[in-house]
Every structure is written in structure tokens, then in C-alpha cells.
Image 1 (spheres, rainbow, N blue to C red):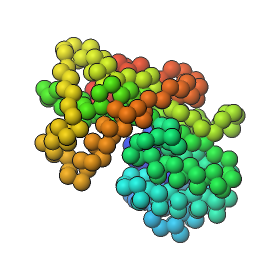
Image 2 (image 1 turned 90 degrees about the vertical axis):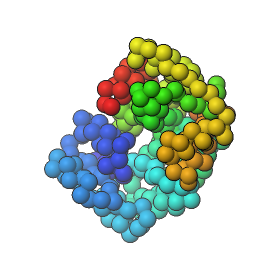
Image 3 (image 1 turned 135 degrees about the vertical axis):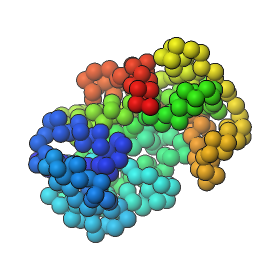
Image 4 (image 1 turned 45 degrees about the vertical axis):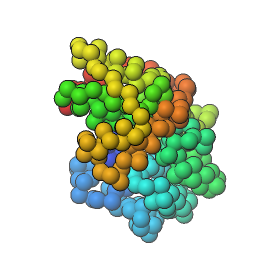
Length: 286
């Protein structure tokens, strides 16, 4: 059996590779990366490191050669870029004759109003049209996405949000990595869509737990979308990224991440890391 993970040197991808290596020998694992130098550590472990660039489809033909179970990790960038890159990867997978495709998607992708949903809808559709057995791993929200807010709080700032009472299924990337690795390795799940959502919490509830972890009250500042944009500018967020960070707040406020599901525990075989413990772990890394 040959497994391949794309984007294997990224924050999530590297964690998934570590999980896979707990269960399969390095000789059965390949990775596809744009920068081979960044994967030297994996190569030294015996992992088959291959060059694959989603903007250069010809490199993917070689990268995906002889692969049976493929994990496509969604790329970064604007929606148009991601749609094109993902399409290149799916088409290359079909040409290579892979027997299974797993794809990291977004919570409730096909019905989501999230500004980041379109590339995931397009990619899920492209994979379905190949007829290749697949799994869509619909990731809710990484707790690591809140590191900027946590660092601000540690420096004495309030937790600023425009998401109001919108709920989020936060979980650590290490939990997502373990779940994704389990799906890639297994062939006995009776479903092909996995809503990987942790227990749902509002921003206020998250801040309450964070206050408990820090042993002091963290101020919660609820603002309008316009005021949130000004706060982000003041924090140094580039102007071109302002619509994205504000749009994420809008999406949360509108309920796009309020997805209740037990798929995470089903795939992990255990509960998701509790929020207090997860925050402890993150803060310990800062």
C-alpha cells in the first residue's frame, strides 16, 4: 500500500504525516511538496519525498505515480487560485489511477455561507465526478486560528470579536491530524463525509475558559464589523486581508461553523481534547 500526503510540510500536513508514521512504515508513505528542501527531515526518516506543484500539473503526474490512497490538503490563497489548484490535483489523481482520495474540506461545505466555502464545494464536486471512492474531511475550525487573539490577551489586550453569539466547533490541529490519518488508513467507515466539529462554543464561552486557564478575567470586547476592521488594521493586518478576517467574523456570526456532529469522536475513537486542556497546550507553546 502506498499513501501520499500533499502539503506535507505545512502545519496540518506535518502533523498528519507524524500520525501516519505511527501506523505505517516510512517506505509506504510518500509526500508531495513544492519545496524539497523543507522535506529533508522526512526524507531522512525514509519517507518517499516527491516534488509536486499544484500550479504545474505535469509535476503531479510523477508525484502521484503508483499511489493508492491520496490525501489532498486544501491549499492557501484566494478562492479562484484554490479552485484551479485543487482541480489540477484531482485531475492528476484520476490520471494516476489512485484508488481513494481524502480531501480536507470545510464545515458543512455544500450548504455553507462561509466566504471560504466555494473552493471546497468545487473540489468536492470534482472528486465526486471522478467516481473514485473518497472521503471529505469537513474541518470546522482550528483552535490555532485563535493564537493571535491569545497572544494579544497575554500582552494585556481584550479579546475582540464581531462574531456575537455565533458558535464554533474548535479543536486542536493534532486532533484533526489524528482523525484525518485514521480515515486515510481505514477502509471500513460506512460514510464518505465526515463533519469534524468539536463541541460548540461562543466567543464568550471560549474567553470564559481562557480566563480560567490564565487565572484572571479576560475582557471580552464585542464590536461591529466596521470597528473590528479598524482594530485589525491597528494590529498590523495588511489591508488586502481585512475583508477576509472581517468575513470570517461575519461567517461565524451567521452560524456557518455551528455544525453539530459526533463524527470527530467516531473517527478518533475518543473525545476531542477538552477546550481547557487544548488552551493549556497552546499557551505552553507561546
